Amino acid sequence: MKDWADPRMKQIIAAELAFERDVAASTVLPRFRRNGTTWELLLLLAASQGTAEDGIYQTLEQVQTSYLGKPALTKFLRDCRTEGSLTFDVHEKRSSRRMSLSEEVHAEILALFSAHAKRLSQALNHPEDDISEDDTTS
Image (tube, rainbow, N blue to C red; front, side, top):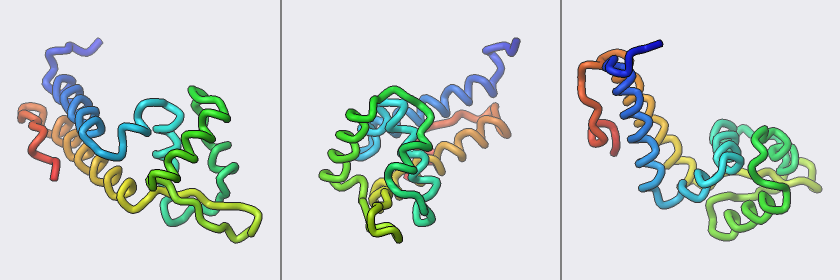
């Protein structure tokens, strides 16, 4: 078992803590983070932004966590669409719609993970350095 005094472990935990605080400080991401299913959906959409070929129901079938039932998830999607964090575009198949993140949400999640990756890299490659929240956020 690793010694918790290992500087890398402390720095990795500090990076994770900074990540959670960055999510909480966001104006658009906390609503997705409240639930494992909605967070997974956000990550799926972010990973396929601009390249998604699946319709809404096919995208929802890719979600593997089951913390929300279908009615609650459908309500969540409607609320996100209403407030503007999700968009629904006409799919090639006219009977289907494609779901994507708003530009603001997509930019925010990319910035968040970029800062997180820098912190983790620093923790793994330079564990003796202190990871401050101000070093990687913009």
